[in-house]
Figure (cartoon, rainbow, N blue to C red):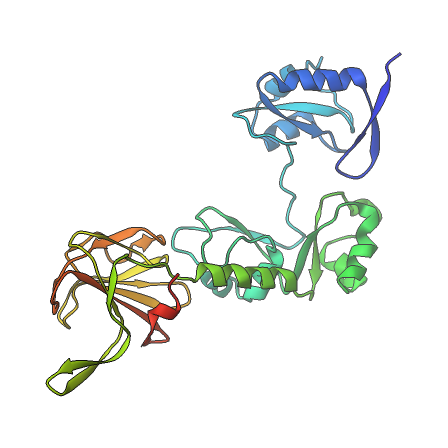
Length: 340
């Protein structure tokens, strides 16, 4: 007689799994890469294979099934090819009434909210696990909500009222916007939309992320020869220096102090010589002057730390150096307070 072993499943229920099954699964782990999928009510071999983009025959072969008959609670091996690790879990479907948007090149969250007529708070509430407000990679899928609120994942159907109470949401409103008519509509792991609940924790976290992302790195390392502010030019004359000067050998790489889009790259008739200007999320700009060579073009997106030009002495310059300016709100500010 097989000795049963209790294994804690994701939905919180205890199932009894024979030791022989565990041994078999451990043996399979040494073979080709795979994941485990616990069969849910309504699953079929075909639907599972389609969800994980493998052939039905592969699932049948991997599990040595006699046919396509599977039952809720069965644990299936899903062949994956390259090793990924962990349990195979399909991404939960968005809540009732939500749309999807895949971020394309050049798109920003501010453009997304304007396009769909929602607020940034609503977008964050629908996507509380966002990693950034300004530096999301192309291809990220965003959920577009029908209004203000917060999306949460329901760990178990029995926790619904507890979740609703924890966020101070209206139970009737939650049921209505999520299309919940009976308790049977609830599923472990499903996404729920809590209308009119502010995504406070997510907004606070993303504000800290933005603060860290908006820091500027030194565009070049060298000897600081001139500071921001009023300076004496001799012969009783003075001028206001709108940036800092860093002396470095000709040809030294100049890097973007922060990621952004190049708005100017060329010769400036205002004494800057070869000049690069980069606009950053939020509207701030950094200027890089006197370059011997420019390595970027207008409209190009550059990452923080990416080489954009080489140190030179073009324009009104007495020697090879970088003249660096930081503009916020249309005016130059002292960049030394922002560089790290």
